[in-house]
Length: 634
Image (cartoon, rainbow, N blue to C red; front, side, top):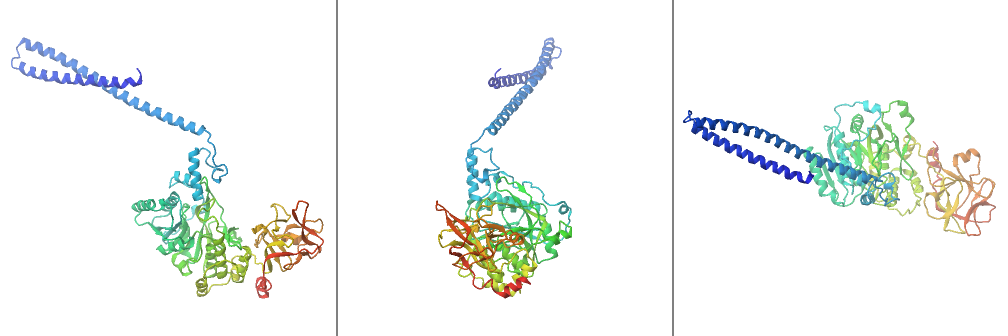
């Protein structure tokens, strides 16, 4: 029978069964009534005959009822089997559809997008569009974040020694501050969830969210609802501080510190996931020494597929532009032969934990910083110069979500320059000029308003802080000071002033003339000793600074690593004054330009023809001051 006719058969069977049950009930009533009347005259033959017939009828009805029960059970089984069959067919169809969708090759809508280089090949065109729009808005893959569980497991990246390490039970409490501005909601919730799940409840006093004037709707009502949900399970754990205007990263961190009440405060970004036992190493070390400011080890969450990549333990440092970078582990740490030991670090990357009161005693952070950049270097210098220290803890690990781009401020250069000069003017003494060189800014009238620093200078005086010279010699000797730079920036020939000396293609060792753009490949540094660096100022031990040399033959100058040029005895010393020729001291040839028949200019070595050069910035007295050079040589 066709499946669509089965329900009618079932209904008919049920109706028949109901009718028979009614008949049985009626006959039983009649039998009982007749039996009662026949008991009045039991010797009646007719009465006995009727009773006998009724007994047979009763037996037949009983058998019929049992048969109907079996039919009823069979009907139920048919219905159940039919339901299972329908469900099974639906599941099969869904599975088949999923297989077909996976087999389907979707057109890649955004082949040049960084989001789809490693991820998203199975997305439909509609899904690609949604993912790309979110990526442009946030700088990371919000589409995948929204589909991942908030309590997703992550790899425990601690070393075996760290996993075995035990800590005291009576540790101080911790306030965790999460800073955000227009962060994706699922990112914030995952950070909160990881902190709750991976921090002992008796140590975690509070989680403080600091919103630096976000405009996204889901960070208003929906976030407040989520906070209530968390607090329903963990009463009073979550708090939120909202700025009424955009104040920047540094001030947001200060607001979080001000709202915190625990013994220790950890100030983190909101786009993180803490790893197992991240807090215990921090709290134990600060209990031992309240003057230490801690950085965890950062692992990386890739912006596209959210895969967690384990990073090696390293110290934190910076270059003369105050860009953060990783430093090799110091020899004294290796000598300890204990991979759980704290690492002495010249600086800090930004995420930090400290004794709450001690951080206040040394001035928290510089609230005069704008937007982003330099604030972490400033804290590191202040900590070391004013009685504290910076350490990286190998057993405390936090995964940090990278961004492919920073959508909230595409051009950070103005804020970075401003903040760097602010740090230099307060903390770096006569070494501050290296920061001006690195950013290619004139020492006088830089055009950068770094704000009022009088209160920060007063703080330095009040805390009786050491000088930057002490810091270089005792904390960060890898940072090289170059006291004899007398000219820096772009360099132009007066014959054609819209082209500049450029380091040329890399890899490669031939400098060229190229339209002026003022970026680091065209930054040149002329020393009073005659060397001419080109291609950016590294000024670090073991860094590759390249010098312009005259090979003595041929017509092309050559770039050579400066220390190698010295060891090879190459011709790397030049005589130059502003507005005059550039003459090699040994070969007496001049650095000049020539044009070919197409009008393209080449940088050449040739017999001097009187060509003149100008360098963008010159230094008057600095670099010739004997007391500065004497201190550096000591």
